[in-house]
Image: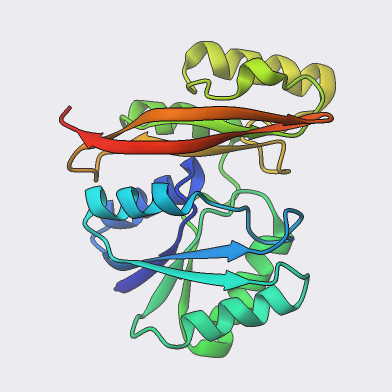
Length: 223
């Protein structure tokens, strides 16, 4: 099928993209929604400059659209964006959120698209290990849960990181894959990249009990 992928540049949407490619689908567009407010129900705010580089190294055209981020209006914004595309379906990285998957499914049904969710109901621990085994390099770029401190900003997801996330899941209830918004990520290398992404300049920003990594400059380098 000819597919578009809802992608923020993070691990889940990127891995869903990869699995769709492995199944032989043709990914013709990366669709990224940019909410105007931080507490969007459906989307987190991707870094626009990062996504340009992500699109360049993956050789998949990027479609960026702004959305209000308000609970129902952002769904209409997404629907209007998708209905202009000539595709057979839409890939998303939903893992456990019935809210997210249900609304994407409904929009796809209305538009006559297939909703492709290759990560749905995967075991959280297994999912992170799968992503590692497939050669993804991922860093944490925002945190907003008890136990996730400043030191987590910019941390690479490796086996030690997964071990710490499991511990925080047991002690604090943090979802191992960050499905509840506990943390967000960006992918610096993936099997479908021609070159890896290197962050050249970044700044950690901390507000109250949450923080984010502001990427100021990034580029592409050979592996």
